[in-house]
Length: 423
Ligand code: EPU
Image (tube, rainbow, N blue to C red; front, side, top):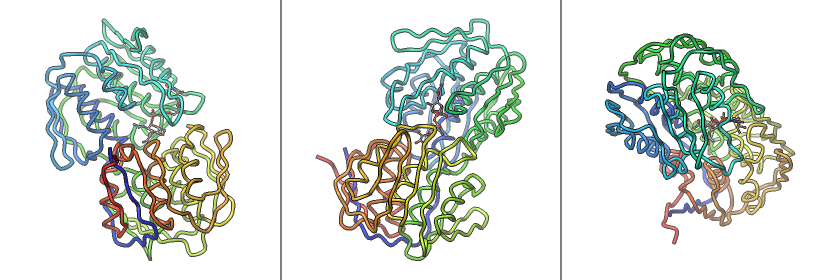
């Protein structure tokens, strides 16, 4: 295991290239199961979650080559229909092989992902959608088995849950429906840019999907799909994390390159409200530290609302922003593990019932803290950059799941972060 030693008092300047999206790459990699032809996928971030997904695909029979962000996959022969617990437990997103396996093999057997530190993460909506297309679902021995002996049939399915739409659930049903007989309508679909990127990928393979990015997606089933060359969209959450780094620790300004600013509207709006100056030009955003910083109140919501995946990083910013800020996570109300670690660094945060009330302090002080999940780890790194002294962050494997070389990227902006073995 490794840990980070983050040296406080950072003064960031320069520019950083944003990587391809982890959350768009994962379902797109899974979707290569839908064709026996070769797919080339560019700008796949080199993070452990994409590595786990490639392991799952290889286990199913895929031939995979990976070099400098480009992954070449050929699923000519799929000789199994299962994703075992050893692989699924490492990454919840492995459930998104369910849809494509069912479409290609008429059967999928996937281990149930189980609990997760950010909260209870059921897959009932995925199963509701897939059974709506005719799959027979049985759960036994910790695995979910789906069968559609005579193939899937297009139907109208409603995917809306009590916390809103489901991103990977929408992806799963969309991937299953592309090869189903007839027309599928997904009502209550997730509208996230990652869903749109998957739909674009599937359409270039020959699928007939319209309405992705709206709550109603229509899919006209086709009989086969072909190979494709696709470039993954930029990672809006990595970009948001670097925007917060700029807002907290820029000497003057930092520049983010290779972004899609239209995917970042809600985050940019809050950062501007907090006093940061932001300039957008094409695929580039420049952000400066706020001269008279102010707190804000945010509620996480499905896209285009404020993303839950940016909630922890905002808590770090608000921890050193004068005044009271209120952060409510309506999607994952238990996702506040970072709050108690930030308190160890001197933050004044009270969490109750999915809401954090943060009273900004003048500065945080470095302390030994523990990373608990991906975005919480990013929040600790951000706080460590501005704290006084050293912040030692253990369990950084959480951050390596979803941020491509975050320590190197921050070092290139002038931060001092040592990655050392944790004995
Ligand atoms: N939900 C259900 N039933 C389901 C599925 C979801 O009740 O069958 C609930 C969840 O418990 C949650 C809400 O619906 O309250 C939304 O969850 P969703 O299914 O959209 O989450 P996901 O698809 O499993 C993706 C991202 C997460 C991100 C969420 C929300 C990937 C690989 N993961 O998860 O990203 O937080 O959408 O936007 O795309 C991260 O990158 O750090 C991360 C956790």
